[in-house]
Each structure stands twice: as C-alpha cells, then as structure tokens.
Length: 258
Image (tube, rainbow, N blue to C red):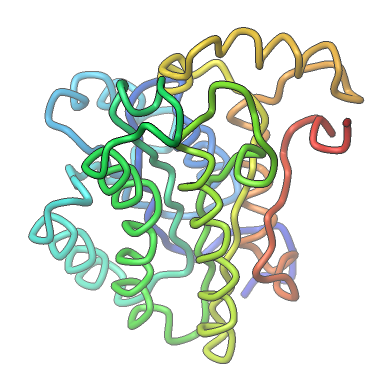
C-alpha cells in the first residue's frame, strides 16, 4: 500500500451500472481512475454499449463488460475475468436500481408483487450476489459500496416503491459489514442527494425534489456525480480503513433539514 491515504495506486476493482454520461457510475469511475485504480466497468444492456464506449477515455480506458445482474452467467464471467486479470479485488461499486414505471409511480400499497420483487432483485439483492462473488477475491480485505437515497429513511413524495427497497439495501449493508468485517472487507452505502441523471428522470416530479435540494440544502446546490465518486475513493482508500457499515450522505447537507 502507498503511504498516501487517499491513493488508489495498485488497487483494482469493479464498478457496475454504467449507462450513459449522467451515470453515478461514471463519476465513480473517473474518481477512481484519477486516484490511480484499475477497473472493470460494466453496463447492463447491449443497447447501452453505444452510450458507454465514448466515455472510456474519461475513465482511463478501463475494460468494459456487459453484465446484466439477472444473468448468472454474465456475473460469473465478470468475476472470472477479474480473477484472471488481477487475481484479487480491492473494491466493488454497485450503482444500479430499477422499478417498473407503473409500480414506481403508484402508491406502495398498490404495487404489484412482480414489480416489488423485480425492484428488490435488481436494486438490493444483486448487491448481495455481487458481494458473495467478490468475497473470495478480497483475501487481503476490500470495500463494497452501493448507492442509496434519503427516501430509505424518511418518506419522500413520489419516491414510493423505492423507499422500502432502499431501506432493505441499507439494512443489508449493515448486516454484510458485520459478517465480512472479520475478513477486512468493509461495506458502505453512499446516499447522494438528487442528481439530474437519466435514471432519476423516471421519478415522478423529480424536478420538485431537485429544486427543493437546491433551495433548502445548507450548501444551496445539488451534488454532482463526481462528488459521489470522490466519497467512494475516500471509503475505498486507506483513508477509510477504520469505517464500515455506514450510510454516508452526499447531499450538500440536505438530509439534516426538517
């Protein structure tokens, strides 16, 4: 390890969920590259390839792989490639969430079983599955990071189904941190405030959330995907070696306001 606590030199990892130039995954990949890490970056659908390939230079030309987390063969291939390339992993960033539009835009009490199960599978259980595959490659320890939102803790208008799903994700982070901590594997959730990404546009009246964050957060601004990436570097680097099981808000302080 380098003696620079925020350096990622010599570290290797996987970042999942890149979809386009607005993705939080891109902000994380750029920050990790700038800190010196090597990465495999995944996208979840073949149609995304034309959007992610032009972004390679911003991320230091990492290896790009298709990985739909619902496809076990693709997940197996991802970790097999990481093992072949490095024989280890130092970090994994899970940056994906999904809920069917009809279920997301309706009341929680009206959501379908199928919609709830799909949202939970992609947004929460996939993190657990990825962690299970990463564990054998983190013999010297490592860091697992996922993305949450304040709607996991408090009721946020129009966040609806994703609130209970993200609450389950944050609880999973705590249990995984307790289970994996003896092996030196740290587990965290980052909780960004509203960011104008293409994925966020699926939330009904998202602009109302964004304007509220801009006007009421102590710093009077929205955060950027790069801000989230810098916090991921902090947690995964030597600087974060004594932290685990946390949900770290990256929201210009918006979560402290009533």
